[in-house]
Length: 113
Length: 141
Ligand SMILES: Nc1ncnc2c1ncn2[C@@H]1O[C@H](COP(=O)(O)OP(=O)(O)O)[C@@H](O)[C@H]1O
Ligand SMILES: [Mg+2]
Image: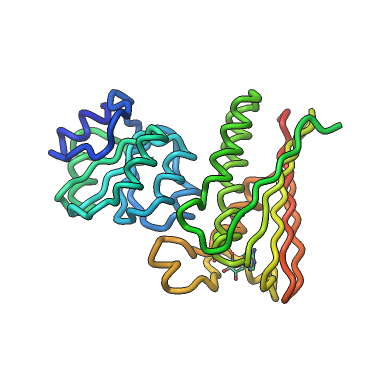
């Protein structure tokens, strides 16, 4: 499953420009504590978080994650999206809760780590 | 013999550039062809050290030094220092402010993450002066 597939499973909007949305998504993760994600994150992960500041992109990028998914339509600042585009991290926005996002991704066959 | 030595200044409470030094260091090591497993461990430890400089110190720097056997990463700062290092090292302990916690920092896992990911970890701190952390990552393991 790719970032594009994840977006269509969730009906999510792609907020970033020029990122590679054909990247495979290997597994999913949901957590809002950055150190926790730093300790457990992995390459190719789709990460669901309500945090929307610059450091989310830093953590996602250090782990070469495939995408970050922001739930409940939470607003993401332009600078953060620009940074994400620069780093090649796709950012998706969904109106669903983190719980529902994870449920749908699991049902679509994305494994947890 | 050191192949490379580079310093990265880190400013206190600057959440916009926080993580930049770690990203630069990761890119540099990638370019030098360092083993991805080593880069991963070093990136995690480096990010935690960098964030601690941002949220706990009054400013500091990260120094990366590479030789044929290993990569060393030193975090040095001016700041409040750590009164009880054993306590600070225990997972879950954090003195981070509520504001900082709201951003998802302050899980109290940083020092433990560093010690776990480095092959050698040494921390020195003087209350009222600052903190110095030295981490060594073996390249050929
Ligand atoms: N560079 C530093 N200067 C002063 N205190 C520090 C520094 N690094 C860590 N500490 C202290 O050690 C505690 C634990 O650090 P850490 O494990 O990284 O967790 P966190 O950063 O989430 O609080 C911090 O809350 C702080 O009290
Ligand atoms: Mg920390």
